[in-house]
Each structure stands twice: as C-alpha cells, then as structure tokens.
Image (cartoon, rainbow, N blue to C red):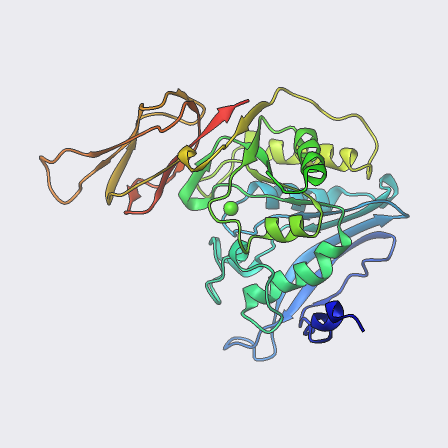
Length: 339
Ligand code: CA
C-alpha cells in the first residue's frame, strides 16, 4: 500500500448523520444531525436544516449561508431558494444549507455560543473536536468532495459593513483561478473583488480551493441586518450562478459591475486607538493616498485631539467598522483599487 493512503486509515468517522439522500432525484428537505448532550436535552442534537435538489446527471453546487451566524443576506436567499426550487428544472444537484454554523445562526452571533467556534477559522475541522470543528469536518470530508461549485455567502455581520461584492481569490493554480473569476463575474454583484484575506489559513474558502473547487464568496452589506437591495443581490447571484454552472437554463441577468482589487496589506487600515470612531468617508467614496479616512476620539476626557487614520493607497472605500466604538487592533476600513 502506498504511504500516501496511510492517513486515510486513521481518518475518524464524523458523528453527523444526514436525513437526506444525496444521490436521490427530487427535492428533499431534511437535517444534518449532530448529537449534543446538554442540560435541556440529555440525548439531544444540533439539527442543521438542509435541502438537496437533484435531477439526473450534472454538476453539483454547494450553497451556504451563516458561516458567520450574524450575516443574513445568504440565509434569506437560501431559505427562499429551498422553498422554490423544482427538481425538474435542474440538470445536476443543488445542496442548500442556509445556516452553516447553525448554533451561531440561532443565537444571532458570529461564533458558536456552545464552544465559541468561528466556523471560518477551524477548517479542515476535526471529527473528534468541538461542535464547530465537527461541522467543519463534515463539510471537509463529505460535502465539499461532492461539489463542483461552492458559494459561501458572507456579509459584514454586526461589526463590519461592506459595499456589496462577490469575490474570488488569487490562487496558485491559474486555471482554477480563472474558473473562480468566471463564476464571480456570472454572480454579477455590483462590485467584483479579487480579495486579499487577512488570514486565509483554516478558512472554508481555503479548504474548498485546496480541493480544486470553483469557489466564490460574498460580502453583501453588514451591521447585522439586511436591505431589500442587498438581499436581491444574493437572490440574483444565485439565479445567475446556477445558470453559469449549467444546472439551470437561461441567460445571465447582467447589470453593471465595478471590478476591484485588493493588491496588498496597504489596503487595510487598523485602529491603534481605543475610543469613538468618526469615519470621514463613506462606503463607495473615491479616496486618495494620504486622505483622512477616520478619527478616533478619546472618550476618557475632553480637550484631547483624536487620533487620525489616513489612506495608504488610492481607491474606493469598500468596507468599514460598523459599531461606534473601537479598540486598539480593530479594523477601521479597507480600500480597494478599481481595475
Ligand atoms: Ca463573514
């Protein structure tokens, strides 16, 4: 036996079971069930809603919302899709999970209230780890391998706000990168961004990309709520990506998109102050290198000047801290460059 296979001999079984049959044609609504013994239910489970819609042969798309539990455009669009999807209109398979980190989603929090787990920082997961790690491992071992296309919906959540964008990453495999860019263009959000991650290790994105999948993600707004405008971007993006994948028929709905790039760390501005933030530009504003982006006021006393934060590059103000108060180390804003 090749040594290459040795790790697989020791791969542990994931405790999650599924009430849906991924190979069956038709539309099935069910659950991923993860045993969770706790005070209110000794033999209870975390039950994660899932819809699988399949018709014959064709590509598989895996659609997820609430990787972070306080980001809502994706979950709304995916619950809506699950209600409306018809198997006879498909060639292939659509796997819909509106609440990926379901405990976090139910609590309206970014991270799991059970174990504090941040779903997008625990991949590839662990079948014997925390609840969040067990869910991640199920995606890594069972769901991602089935998929050709993967769309993971994010928004800013309670602490960030973004210009609505769909994004792809710079990848070592340029052929794969081009497929991801084509999917991002097909999604056709008002902004299309080549995204530089602050810390890509342990992200779902990275796990999917390392398996060679066509992966795109979004940031569709923020502040822990939605607008009719940003929800419609998610719904239209889903209609478009299903057509792009060849799973449904029809022409893409194409509106204008602004292509943006995040070339290096200079696009990010972080606070080194603790206090009250005053953003001096709004999302979508054109900014110049050296321009004042934000002030942080000292709230411990009057009569002290605020700390000032300036743009390091020219571009479009694309994302910002959402709540009024910041601490040292908080993200203040990001500037992306039109291409
Ligand atoms: Ca997020």
